[in-house]
Each structure stands twice: as structure tokens, then as C-alpha cells.
Length: 190
Image (cartoon, rainbow, N blue to C red; front, side, top):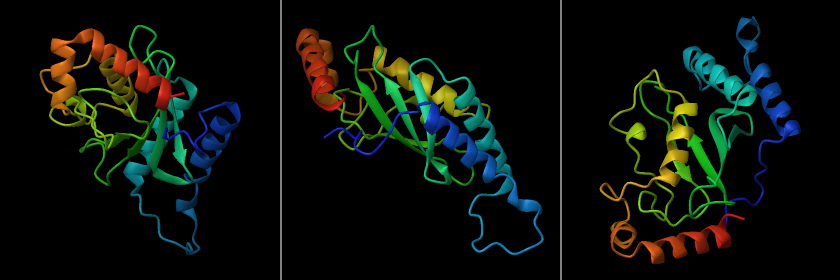
């Protein structure tokens, strides 16, 4: 039940296609003709997202990639490779990212599409992570978010769980927790 069906990781060709999409979506505003459909993305948001996308494509964070979903600048798909020093080693995890209209003043909505056994990520893929809530700042970028999610895969936070049962198991029976997390990674993230 991995979300990997139909989603390609950011290879050279898809990265080039994504970059071309980003370039083509930036040039139409100077036209005097009417567009067949109005752009739902304001120009400030559009510039910010195009800049972040270009940075991610040219210098992706370690073990991460991201690209547009279709041609919609506010919807991205990200891939995180399970950190080698974690129970998620060798897993490939897909995340859906949606940028609200008032981004960067509001954090992006990020959810796991790949099932994962983690006390800070629930069965709907919602993530309990401070940078996606309380500590978000407009100075942060999607790069910051992806690095924070990678860090969460290495060091979960059982003191602020989204799934209390997994947090309890992590604290009381670490070997069983680790066995389950590795099993889910093998079953759903490969």
C-alpha cells in the first residue's frame, strides 16, 4: 500500500521537466492578451515557490527530492530516503506538500503518502512536527521542512506523540518498536 504507485522520484529527466514547468509558469504575466484561465497563485507566492523549487532541484537536501505535481505550483510531491542510521533505512517515503495561499506566512501542509510506523506520524500521514506548527517562520523554506522530517525519522519525539500507542511502545519496549518499524518499512516503503 505504498504511495509509490505512479509517482516517480526526481530523476534527471523528471527534474528537467519540473524545471521547464517552473520556467514556463513564470513568464505569462507580461502578456497583454487574456489568459484562458486565471492564475490561482498570486505573484509573490509564485516567485517564492519558483525560487524554492529551483533551489531544491539544483541543490536538494541529503536523501530528499521534490517536484511539482502536474503543473500546479502549490502542489508538490517529495521523496525522502530513510536515513541509514534509522529503523527506516532503505525505505523510500513519499510526501504530499500543499502550499497555502498565504505561504510563507503560514506553513505548508505536509503529509506522508507512504505508510510508516512512527509515533509522530498517524495513519492519515499527518505529521506532528514543530516547524509545521508553532515554530514556523516565513524565513523557513521547504528545504528546512524536508530536513526536519528526515531528522524526525532518525530521532522521534515520544514526548509529543500523534500516535500514543507507538510512543508508549518506543519508551517501554524499544526492540519491539524497532522490529515493527523495520517491518513496515520493508512492507510499505520499498
